[in-house]
Image (tube, rainbow, N blue to C red; front, side):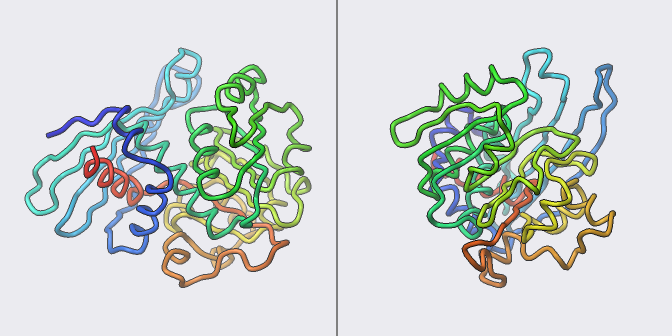
Length: 311
């Protein structure tokens, strides 16, 4: 069994290639049981979460990701999300690779948002707002820039110093990155708004949105967390990565449904619908689109397959 570390994951999973790999995976026949989601009590302010995410492709591979989320780790100088991915031979069950979980997760998550943006964001999007300064933030910026002509990036975070450090680290010739403290103005000026936070109360207000924007919601992956308010849901055409996952775990979807503001049938499409051409994405230039991602084991399996093949 090969051990594939973070450096190898970063080397093998380039965003243009990974976006295409995910597009092929969503078109394929991959079995994805609903992930196991367990709350683990801790001695900290917030409980931890244990996620078990299996998937398999008949005759090819079986994979399972084990992930832990400890929100209080941020105060200890440790990553909030950690884990590992085990890739098995689909014909014999033989373990093939143990892949670094955090690096695989951030890359496949960012690539899924970029895949959605190919169908939902306007082709001429140049301005991106990144809300959040955690491990996902730089990957979401790079992934969106791989599928849209991003030229200007703003970063907003609850800690302005972290936002400034991230902007300085990512600033480059092909697109300029800077920090902002004015979230409403930054939302209003962006073509794509990408969020990756652990917010329990909405950060993005629908009244700030303007026609033609694309809202990419990546954080808030439990029913009690939320990044967008009700007005966002009312103004946007809503898409998800998978219907099963979003309807079970996404606070940005579950809460509006419980309040009677959104029906399950109002979800226009998921990534399988979009990649197979079964549902349309963006219909017109001035439409506001909203994509809610909670993650799926299909994405992990596809990324692990690509990583194992190239490593």
